[in-house]
Length: 476
Image 1 (tube, rainbow, N blue to C red):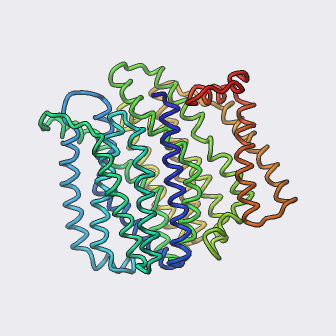
Image 2: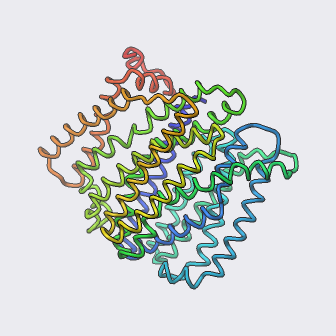
Image 3: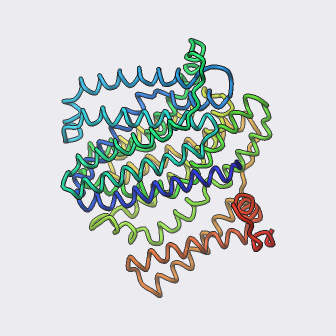
């Protein structure tokens, strides 16, 4: 399967996931209200951190070792280690339930233990599938999980089960995805040995900080905000973050698709020029959606936020800052992904340490001083540091070519899109239906202009279409 098609499958699956989450968020915010939805977000943030602690770098290690196609049973070895780590964390959560319940504001300790089991199971299945070069299969599990979650959550919340219905939907969605994904797994018939455990440990001992980095990027600000601001403001912040994350989907799809390919090349061929070429491709398209997303957010973000209910438009500037942070982090992720594929987790350890340290220090200092604007700024600055660190270390391992021309063409296409969308808003008005129509129109303009400007993009589209396009073939 071509890299582009695999990336597109993953992207479309994430798009379906985002749409399901978008619908669920609107219903949850309007049914639960800002305060209860904010509580739900805080519980998810605590869950995210406990998930990270229960994995301790194991997902990256499993993905790497399985992708190398060496002998050994890393599937069962990884599953056994994961079960042990989960048991430790579950007992810790149960012992600390008074403090957890006091922090989140509801009796959530037992729910967290159940949600943790479901989350770890589906994550384990997805990482094994990724390592076995079945990214297109693991990608399909994402919309399966989110669609199942949304259906259950909406049904229960609308049926007056409140926040408990939201928690139940989360668990059910993860279980459904894990069961379906397990069908496609290939489990070696050999018994796991101490060698597999040692090889997993050798990678995980450095990659665990990458888990902390990802988690700090995703929800460090939410946890710090829970100390300084109300849950209603956290709800607005989370909505802005979700919209910013929507634009970053394609970049993460590329890195997830290319990692097993880079890892396999590194382990079997050692061809660094080929890996360098794949890195250039990933950098060329990491901003494909988020660059126009940032421009579009600046134009119509205030109106789009009103979909979630009254008061959410106050997150307009937060949306812009977080989208820019997502842009920086997306490019940084391509470098870190490549370094890990080259089997240098010790170098990504330094990048992750710099990110986590900066993110934590700035989040505490700036959120205390400037509230949610400080939290957004902290995320942006630490993302910039990760980008610089990723570029520095990747350049030491391979020849790094920055596709400046392709990125510039994406920016130019976004500017043309912005001019036409702004003109349409001035002529037609700024009601929500009109703005939604302008967003769709703007997306079409952006890709049409980019196809005209970029021969490389046209070639990529033609090569990965499931059908022949005479018009695009002629344009080439």
